Length: 212
Image (cartoon, rainbow, N blue to C red; front, top):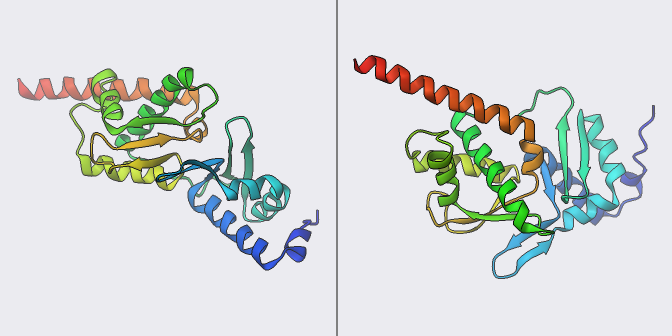
């Protein structure tokens, strides 16, 4: 079937620039969200989201040539891409997975309070409490440099956005974006949390045996 890439022939130079920028952002960061945080201005509309809303079909056709499937979640306000041949997945370490699960749990908890505001605001301290104290997914307090690196992976994929401070500081404030709902499905959340807990118990038993 012939691709209808008419838009590319009729677009202005400025529209083509934005088309390129939006495609690159989707391929490198997976998501484009409706609102962004700007220091001193709070939440602002994302012009890339607006562009995608208008030119959804054209961008979708173009990306499908590259084996990427563009999808939209209008209710939660984001666009995202899936690779149709699974080759370009972001592979997470066990620690990163644990932190991502904690972010999804915090997002779910704040959803009840949020109403229509789709982003959950929280601090690094709250994430650490989840991962270490509440769920014991990570045994001791994690290395803060590793923690910061994990958080930057999630920020680069538009799952979180920093508001103030740095990710290796307990009082750093950031937003968990609704894109977390695609990054971690509800079933995946329950399965992974159970597996991680089992592994921690097995590690503890192994340590007790070696201590005898």
